[in-house]
Amino acid sequence: MQMDNMEDTGRQTPLVTARQEGLVACTRCTRVWPIGTDRCARCGTALRSRDRGSLQRVWAWLAVGMICYIPANVYPMLRTRVLFNSSDDTIIEGAIELASHGAVGIAIVIFVASVMIPVGKFVAIAWLAYSVAKPLSMEPHRRHKLYEVVEFIGRWSMIDVFVVAILSALVQLNFAASINPGPAAITFALSVIFTMLAAQSFDPRMIWDTNRESLSG
Amino acid sequence: MKRGPRMADIASDDPDLEELIACPQCDALYVAREPASGERIMCRRCHHVLIAPRSGAFGRIVALAVTVMILMFGATFFPFLGINAQGITNRASVFDAALAFVDGGWMMGLSVAVAALIVLIPAARAALVVYVIAPLALGRRPWPGARRAFRWSEDLRPWSMAEIFVIGVAVALVKVSDLARVEYGPAFWMFAGLVVVIVLQDATMCRWTIWKTLEDRRP
Image (cartoon, rainbow over all chains, first blue to last red; front, top):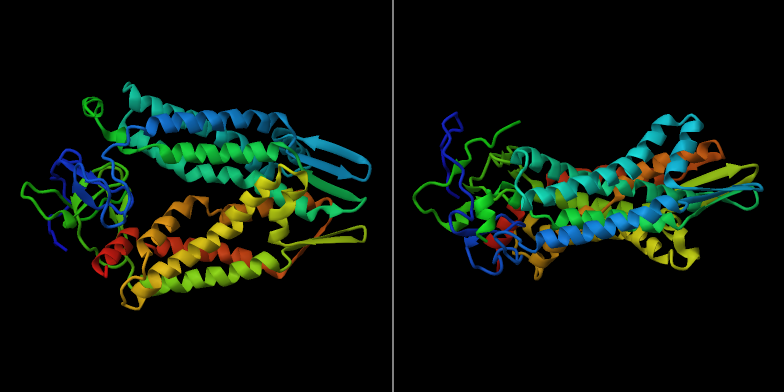
C-alpha cells in the first residue's frame, strides 16, 4: 500500500474522477479497472462507468410505489374491535385516533413515518432523477445530501406495517377485543419496498457529472 | 465536516490500479492509504466514508455475528409480549407477529415479507458474515464462495429491519396500553439486545478492508 504524505492543507489538487482517467470504478468494493472491463475481479460485481438504464428503472419503481401508496391511504390499515364496537382506521385516522387519546408524540412518529417520509421520498427521488436529466439544478453537494437522506430514511417507513403486525398478533382477546390487519397494510408495505428499489436504482455518480460529460455517454 | 486526512489525489504519474480507490458515490479517484486504526478516510468531495478500519475487527465482527444468531433464535420463539385484559390473556412471539397476516389469504405474502425482514434476513446476514470473516479472523484463506457470500450479505443490508421493528413495538405498546396490561417476555429483552449488537457489528465492518483481505488472500 502506497503511503502518501501529502498534507490536506488548503492547497488541494483538483479532483479527478475515475471516468476522466479512463477507468471504471466498482461501486461495491471501490476497486478501479480500465474502462471497458465487464466485471470487477475483486468482488465480482458488474462494472458500469455510469449506469445509463438507471433513470428508467428509477422512474419505473417510483411510479409503482406511488400507485401502491394510493390504496394504502384509502383502505383501512387496522380493524379494531372492542366488545361490540368495531372500527376501520386508515393510516391517517389511526394517527388522529392516537393523538386524540393523548399520545401525541406517537401520533407524530406514525404521521412522519407513514405520510411525510413516503411523500417526501416520492418528491425527492423524482426531483433527483429529473435534475440529472435536465441540469437546471442546485449544487451537487446539496443534491448528494438529499440522496443520502433518502437512502437512509426510506426503510423507516416500514414502522407502521410492523405496528400492525404486532398489534394483530397480540390483541386477540376473544370477545373482549381484537385487532386485525386491513388491506392497506399490504399496499403500504409494497409502496415502501418499491420506493426503496427506486432509490437503490439511482446512480449517485450522475449527480456529479457535468452536463456535457453525461451527454457524451 | 471532517475531511479525509492526507488522502492523496491521483498524481500525474501512473500508479498501479490496485492502489487506487474510487468513491462509489461520486466517482472521485484517490490513491488509497492504509489509515491508522480508528481513523476514518472520507471522500473529499461528497464525504462518503471510504476506509474505516479497526484493529482486531475481524474477530469482533465474528463474535458479534454469532451473538446475533443466538439471540435471534431465542428472540423468535420465546414469548415476546403478553397482554391481559379482564382476565383474558394472550401471548405472542415475534414469530406470531410475522404470522399475523396469514389468515387473510392474499395477506400471506405480507407475513412472509415481515418474517423475512425482521428474522430471516438479519439471521442470514449474520451467518454469511461469519462464513466470510471467520477464516480471515483466523488468518486463513477465505472459504470457497466467500466473495459471493459477502456480496449477498451487502445486498441484504438495507432489507434487514430488526431495528425498525423495535420502534414499531414501542408504538404498538402505546396503542395497547389503554386497552390492556402488557407483560414483557424474555424475547423482548433479547430482541432489544439484538438490535444493539447488529448496530455495533455494522459500525465495526470496514467493507474496503474486507474486500482487500479477500483479494489478498485469494487461494
